[in-house]
Length: 535
Image (cartoon, rainbow, N blue to C red):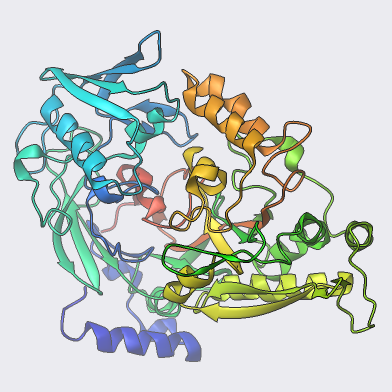
């Protein structure tokens, strides 16, 4: 369907079509689509490639590789490569039994040696996959492997769910660009900046995919929408701004997510710097009254309706609705009078009559950064700035590149987005041990009581035992990381993932999606099929 060379001209034309509108009679007819092929524009290009040991597949499905365990459509954890696993009495030794019928796409068998190699490599790479607690991986026999941890760690379970297994015999420096795995599809062509073409893996041990070939196009939101209107793609990820426009031959699917957006506040006062010389802290947002007043003043339902066109839900934490979420963290928001009282009680008053409250010589104003080019985050930032004006707080909204945000995020508020099926992300966002580490805790939040609950959750022997500790970290009745406690974030919304889908394509029952990195819609790709056979 797409031919290298003239594709960029077509994409440019599609962008223009998105703006001008086009007649369906002038575009490709759905009946001409190859019955065994799909063309998708469902997400961005993985800049680091397709190596699970450096993070590919961390959000959503690795597609080319298989994992030891996986989540079903109800987010239950079930076996994938594993047939069984057990944990020793002290919680330190995990023994996993493997299927004996699995081959990589090059025909070589997948054994315990490959599992050991994958985890050892991931530990050495020290990427988003934190394996610092992994002491040793031992091959017991071809189909049995043990993981020995330094300390019990309930979240090790999620590493078994997300880390795709790579082949020891075919792993090298260029693996990320030429992955070989045991997943439902194999990569056959990657035109960087343009597209990835995959074909069904004939060696796949699971349910055989219906579609033999899939092309993933890397289009921006405008071009993806235009491509959907031109019938050049079967599925297109679109922003809510396009959701009201009907596209003939396509239906809109709104999939619930934990893909949240929220404002991170610098937690500490100004004065310090990172080792790279970037300023840390903000005297305004370091005041808990400012953070709490903003949380209370924001009308989250209005954000969902006004910015997301109704496609989303209010967010009160980074983990709303997940098993480790503390439901007590929901509070009455959109309450301007309560927000004013919080500020007044803390000594913030508008003494010079300019509409901005001050405390001593400090005015209640700060900058909120968002990644430029992200229309949704820009709209949310501007809406929040308007919502807090009546309580006397002035927010300066600025769009920046991620390179700039990385330098400024320790001293300015930032509109971030997270959302994972793994509670480890909550630990990374709020743990004292992650202060200033990458994007996780740039505000230098710290609470020793929260850290204590985290420690108990991590050292729990089972996921079930850990749940209560995760909840107490959010709010234990006295303190916590949520807005009821320290309020280092003002979470705003969980955005629905919106896709225009060929009206004849069945994409199965989608689980609640994590954050949009990766291609979460493909997590059940084996279930996709045409609703009726084409002639």
